[in-house]
Amino acid sequence: MDTDDLSEEAYKAIIVNSELFHHNLTLQFGVLSSSCDDENEYLEQSLFMIEDWVSDIEIAVNDIFYENIPLISKFRSVLIELKNSIIEVQKIPIDKRTYEVW
Image 1 (cartoon, rainbow, N blue to C red):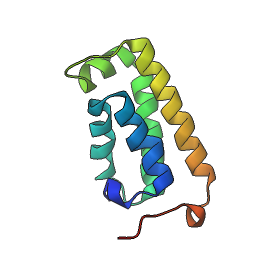
Image 2: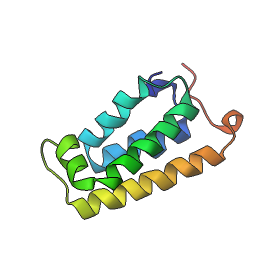
Image 3: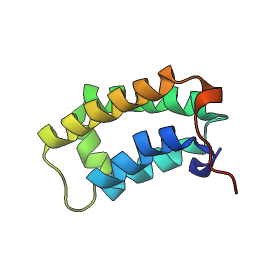
Image 4: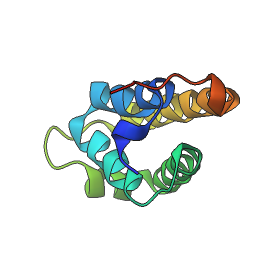
């Protein structure tokens, strides 16, 4: 799938919020979408990726950010916010989420 296939709620929770923090973080979530079949899988995989980063945050910072490297404390806070946002989207039934019509 592509990030364009995400509901508006999922797109805002992950792509928009990660971009507000740092473009390099957004790229990670964008790449992840290509390995997922649907939005539910993408949300689950995003949570797993966040948990992996939190478990070794120093390595994650070095792997993700190439310029304007954020403070670890700020990165950790953003990851918690992203996780909470994803969990909120998961609570919305898929048929109640909003999709952009092309």
